[in-house]
Length: 194
Image (cartoon, rainbow, N blue to C red; front, side, top):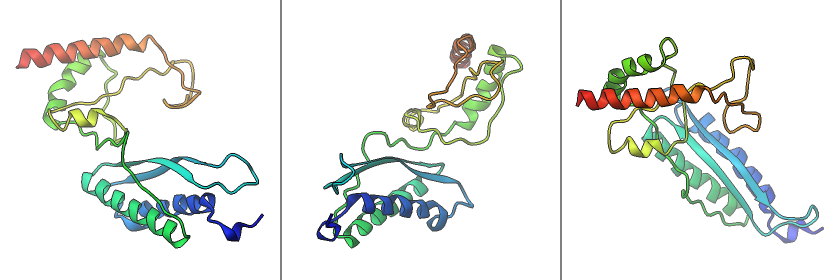
């Protein structure tokens, strides 16, 4: 009933979420590479008529360039802490848990393995445009050449279906056979080449 006597983390958190959107839309050069900043979790309070004492947010950064990711992180910390400070609050920003780097396919390995994938799934292999997965695979490919590929498992008679991470995701388990065949073929051909 007396909001002027306290600090409202719901309002401050909302301001931070909105301001973070300007990092991609106004502060970095996305004409060179795209990027995404998403806050997917904002939790605060337990009653509709009580201003809570804290708010908790969690999100993700997606970009194709590691320098751009580092710049976004720097701007994110600055944005969150300064908005909180301006409102009489304190924001603590941590990058722990899931903070995977950019997933990059090694060009030479990819070129070498495309025929293997084609042998495993004739007529079904296609190169895609860049994508922004949040994948721990990126950590492996920092150490050794890597190649990340997707397995299409959409049911053929389903029309348009939801992607993974959706409660409406549908899986055609018959596609798993192609996945196993692809992994075995890639492994055997790679070992034979070495």
